[in-house]
Amino acid sequence: MCGQQVPSQPSEEPVHWRDSLNSYLTNDLSTLPAMDAVVDSFMHFWGLHGVSMAVMRNDSLLYAHGYGKADGSTPMTPGTTLRLASVSKLLTAIGIMRLQEKGLVYLDTPVFGPYGALKRYDSYIKEEDYYLITVEHLLRHQAGFTSRGGDPVFSPYTSLDALLQKQLGRKLAYEPGTTQEYSNMGFLLLSLIIEEISGKSYVDFMQEEVFSPALCRGFRLAGNYLSDRHPGETRYYMHPEATLTASFDGKYAAVEKCYGGNNISGSLGAGGWTGSAAELARMVACINGGGPIEDILVPFSVRQMTDYYDADTFSLGWNDTKPTGEWTRSGSFSGTQALVKTFPDGECWVFIANTSTWRGSRFSNNIAALFENLRSRFSPALPVRDLFRE
Image (cartoon, rainbow, N blue to C red; front, side, top):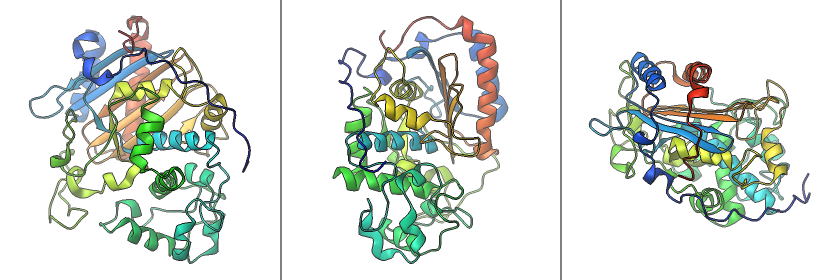
């Protein structure tokens, strides 16, 4: 589809929604004692210090509540921001679709080679298969990268240029497009494509072209250490069995892995964003093809992101998009567990915790089971209203 014209963007929604969602949402606005007790019990069982949860139905925010503590003394609130881990990939995919709508990049755009979006790095390439990689391969985790032997994005610190030189000098694990393997490297490269094509920093582009049009003011790129925490951001906690590790940058011999174990900010669009559950729900409202909130993507882009291929193919930004309308995006790393899930009946549930569990990325299955339990018992009792407007 290289060179294909994308339908023009609809006019942007008039600014009549609340501008600072995180600043006015409080726990007092959303209380359903029986449901809250179930969440509290889930947290206690899994040893979670704090959780932020939001429930949206048909683009209306029905419920937003913080559970437990954001740190030792501060309660978690709906406006508390948390690291999003790989939920960041959904946001990066939106950025790529925005570029496509401007006619600046397409899914079949090559990443490397004379017409590649990142041709400036061609001198590092040692294997011809790299020239087969397209933007779509990166989005679908089909580019040939592997994390076997360690994730290069979260390897001990080197400069970005040195990291790329090392990666592009390696053989790919498989020919691009022939299979898939989950890859942070692919989404780091997508972040660099956004910078290269837009002429802006990745963060500036995302703020101007994704978050601002969606009226989401609270997304920030995460820091690596406790001292880097943003105002209003939670503290992060490891599970009791976790051991100390050397810091990614070599500064410290022993740190909690959630504070210095990984270069989170350096992962950019692969896992670097912080935000609130409520604003994540609003982002979904802006890319779901429904109303009344006007999408920031045209229907063509929404369909591309949510088209179902088969059970073994990643969707664009989402982990999985079933043809029924059930879409899933999970995220997990040290100190963070997150899940965003939409359902065929128009509900979207968002859960973000500030604590690791021993199950790692598999914990998303436990969160999904919690969603099913809460939906079956409490969906009819959720207040009919819209906290995006109130």
